[in-house]
Length: 78
Image (cartoon, rainbow, N blue to C red; front, side):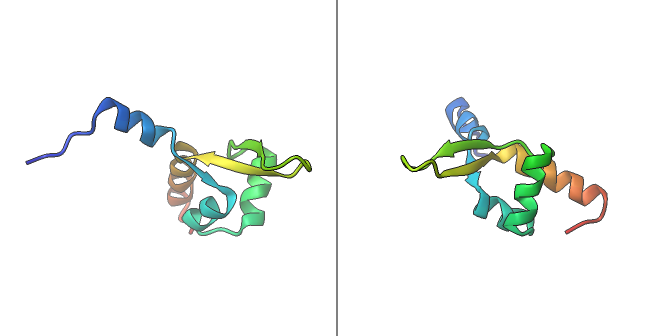
């Protein structure tokens, strides 16, 4: 029996986000390397405040992670 995902589940999966630490682990890179790619805009991220002091956190969508994995695979990277 095959399991089909509902439209809501597909949307939820597409909207899934990872923080910088999780993204770095998934890509087998350092947080600094992922942060540099965000600055260079080769990985798109959303910057969200985490408190009133001006601190923030980056969040990266699952699709961006998958796109970077494909790029790394095509060039034989980690």
